[in-house]
Figure: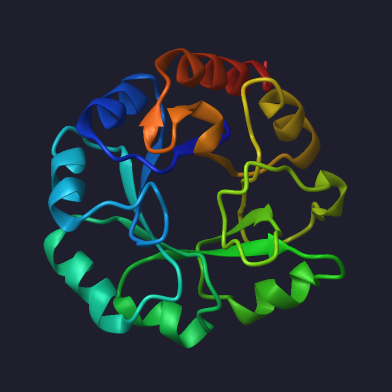
Length: 206
């Protein structure tokens, strides 16, 4: 079964709705330039509504060690998502499992990336757009994803209810990650879009 992470959650209502509709994980953005960025206080409110077995993921983009440690000390985070140019040793140094986001640039060698981040729990593949670390709302060429990578693949980038079934059938990822594709506005989720996305993601494997 393909897991689903709904990222960019900013309020407890959206978190609860996501988990009630079988999302496996919710993502909290700790990247100040993002319109979906949350404070520690907001993050605690969001996570207070989550049931057991729904994972919490903290997203950072080239953050300072002190910033990351401050979040981890105060917020019950299960997994870290590094979305910048963080080296492997840095990612692995927080005593917490992590996934590494990879922007699918032309000519990128995913096998080399996998070797470089061997300590990661998975690679999150996102669309490359110059100057934008993620959340582009655009897909990339899914044919570029090899089917023989060792690390689990989390597919992101421009996923919506209308293309999620095809994405899962074609890429066969361990998980998918959606943010803008289930929003009514940046940082506010659309309940109907979540329902449709989850339904189509599950339908893809029937």
